[in-house]
Image (cartoon, rainbow, N blue to C red; front, side):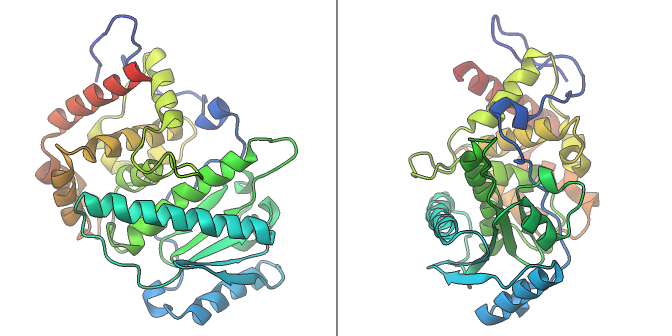
Length: 329
């Protein structure tokens, strides 16, 4: 797949693989990479909607990891359970409340079938990488993971990434928080079905679509994601190609390998950004209705083409869409 040449504007070219120029290096953050959403084993939140039961499940996980009892603070839509400083937990609650307001408004205005939140959403907020790793049972990869949303349990788990040697840790906190909290909202409002076998191209695309929000709310869901766009622009300057949509929708491991993960996340953002445009959003909703009913991956491409059109047409439109964004950047 090649992108047509435009004078002085870098675009995607010959088939190559992305090297180790990660997004983390480009924006100068450490520990910002996120785990892909998986159907992680855990309690079905539908069977544990009672707040006390949810808190006890979190406390039991903490004890298993060797952590002391966690504090609990309930907000309007969320409950924070953690050992981070009270100020940090209060800030995280406020940020999630703002994100939820933006999310519900954004998707309701675009006529998505958004279901009302039926419970306070749990956020586990841990003081540091060691406690985060202990809670989740992480080992070698613990330093590379700043936040995770567990699909089965419905828990959002984040940590305080601020370190003396990393002055931009606050930005790492908010990007990770908004990315994972967007996953949580997408599933809790039933835009995505918890039991569906969904392509990470869609799941992570929505995460990157929401992570762009800024704490002050001046940049909201749906705005250009400058960091992801930088990855696309850098890849274009190196003459790299986007992943073909057949591969992109069937090979979830593209989001896990160091060679491919940052381009995969960036392309997923660009795809969702295109599908959320007025000319495409109705077809995107039709696609999601089909994809949410699937419990295995074998019909992913059929669903994609039935809801959104031919792969060739989609690839062409995505290239044009991203080229326009790169030119404006």
